[in-house]
Image 1 (cartoon, one colour):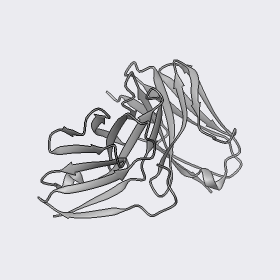
Image 2: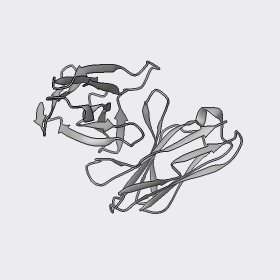
Image 3: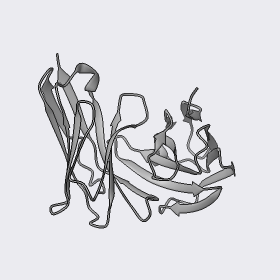
Image 4: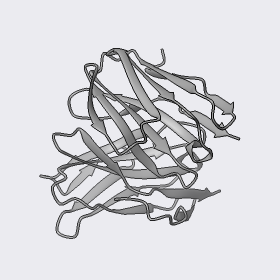
Length: 112
Length: 111
């Protein structure tokens, strides 16, 4: 969805705990979703993706959940590590995947 | 072997100047993009090119003109720079299922 000028949401998590980052997407026609991680001073990097015909997908330490009924996406990070500290974006794709809309981002701070 | 590269990494210039940012990808992707990231980290697509043809132009002022000399390059030229143009500009590329690979970004500061 579009930014409405809000400050960047921040999630602080103790090292070793699990993190859950949430995202509400805007377009019910979106059929492909991606989570990106952006470290300070770098470009966004792919973490995990999911298609609309799935409701869960697991990667290494990460799980993405998709609830199309309420247009909600979440990213779960297991055993959060200091290297996980970054800004996380969800992205929704539609229109033959040429149109990509990024969410507003969530800053994850891992407390050692 | 950098997949998506941008130059320069930092660009400081005065209002009214014209500047260009260059982007190159060596992934063989057929689609390239320019994104603008503001101070609140919001990422917004500006342009998308597929095989050198413009396919997305998201209500960007016409002071911004992308140029794609070949499918491995997408440069961004900005005329008459304004203070509000200060941001980080990211180039990205994709092939097929739109998994974007992003460049390292160019931090533009207009004074």
